[in-house]
Every structure is written in C-alpha cells, then in structure tokens.
Length: 217
Ligand SMILES: [Zn+2]
Image: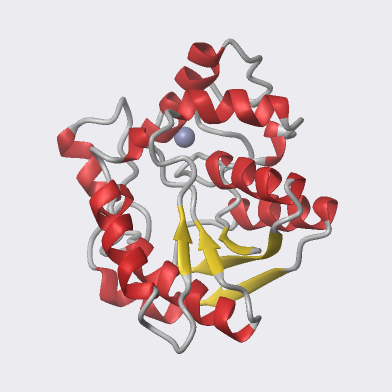
C-alpha cells in the first residue's frame, strides 16, 4: 500500500488512478505551502472523492516567507511565460519542496502504518527540478528506509517516463484530465501561455490524446 504525495496536477492524478486501480492507494496528501492559488486542491479533492481515497491536507502556508523569491509562492515574482528554459525554470523552483513534502508524507505513512509513499516525478522534470532526479530519489529512498523502526519506501514509477507517456497511461486509466490543474496562474481557465501550460499542451500532442483542457488562449 502507498500514500501518494498529491498536488492535483496531471502527473500525480494519473499516479493516484494507477495506484487506485492496483488497489494500492492507501491515502493521499495535499499540501498548502503558500502557492498562489488553490485550483489544484479542488482537483485533488474531486479525484479523491471519485476514487474513494482519503485526502489529508498539510497546512504549511506559514513556511511561505522562508522560501524567498520564486514564481510559485512569492507575489513579488511574476509567472514566466514561454517554454521552459534555464532562466525561467529556475524562477519556478520552491527550494527543496519535494524533500519537505516527502518527509511529511513519510511521517503520515508511518502514522497510518503504510510502508510506502509515492510521488509522480518524471523524466521531463529532471532538467528543471533537482528534487525530481533519479539520484535524489535513490538517496531519499535510502534515508526513508532508516528514518523509523520499520523502513518506508519511496515509489517513483514515472521517473523514467515522459509527460506524454503519463498522458497515454492516464487515457488508458480513463482519467478525466479536465479535473487536473497544471497552470501556475490560478485563473478560471488554464492560461495557455506559461511554461507548464505549454508543456501540458505538448504532452497531449506527443501522446496523440485529445486535450480537453480549456485554455484562455
Ligand atoms: Zn498557464
């Protein structure tokens, strides 16, 4: 069984459906770490309700001032437009976010007597996000096996898959992609212009799966 670190984004929603289909979804954890909007939470709550998976919420919003200037948690930094490039992707890094979220998920897993946690890092994340790399996941898995009396394992089934592969898997699992949120801007609709919107569009195109997302443009 596994507890899923669940943002309500496309990747982690496919992960939730995969583990639920395998009968291994023991719960999900969503965190408020001071991000700009709660659109992802609405998606997370809806998917968990649909699948009958318990959703825990960690309120980490008090940490926001500690994260400095980045486009996700600081009102002073604008969300970059255009495709991911070295200069704009670094602006979207919340320092050490995955380690923080995975550490809290491990604590929750121990409390639930679940021996595993899972996150949806994929190969396209590696370049942009150091805490989505194989080396990071391997090292953290090693530490989690030692953090309690019984080992906790870190599952990362998508780590060598592309986002397009994840879209294909999601289509097979009949994921309602309209109930997933990617955009860094939290408007009524996906903006269609920020790096993560462009990545989302491209993933559907590469996967040959219809993109049912409503984009503002
Ligand atoms: Zn966007």
